[in-house]
Picture 1 (cartoon, helix red, strand yellow):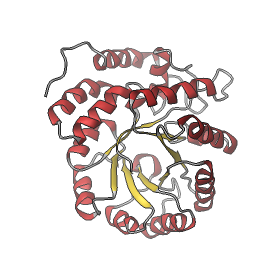
Picture 2: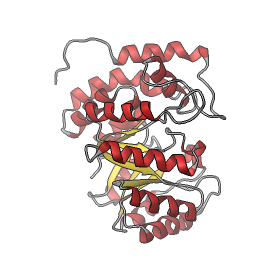
Picture 3: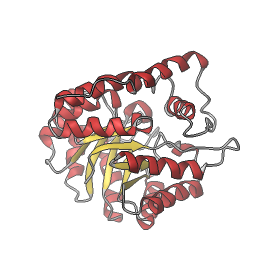
Length: 297
């Protein structure tokens, strides 16, 4: 159901720090035109923690309305509270999204049994496809493979976004999970490696900046055109790395503003990109967009 290049969409803002819905709609159209396979709305890259419930609903509703079935919409509905996660997931279902991405509860550090019960409860209450999301660097909570395997037996838990750059972890997941269970990378720099080992795609920050190139790289990898995928990924690697030179989404919003796609505003505690990092991002974008002879297999 979900594969290829899936963008973790940013949330554009005006100087007033209100959501810039005009630019937001334009971004969605750009991704549809570029062939991006799906959009994640109001995830970490979308500054979900700084959004009000009303703003979150507005973003999801607007994305569904604009998409009109042309691109799949995934709503970020995870929270540290199981009840709040449930409520957001119920709303997302009513708004018409294709799936929900639910991050492990942050800060309260549940046990593996707690994680299992958390996801099981939500899945049993809301009949919508659910993608698990494991990102220990942000949540201080690691969803282990054996827990993922247990959760994968629940019919509407369909996949996992794994942000750990750990090839052994992926091998374990591929060997233990049913082949219908969708494994997605949550780390741009290792996404190609993950796909070559069995993952179906990536939920990407880089795709905000170069959606067509990310789509081409993922498509080549999934079609077995590994040489082409590797060539594209080599061009993208400086972007993969520099987009995390400061906390996401600080670098990607700065670079998109340089490209003229959005204004460079975000809410505290996030702050604008430091001057000392700007040259690196410009150079990375130039490398990605460099004019070369056509890529050949």
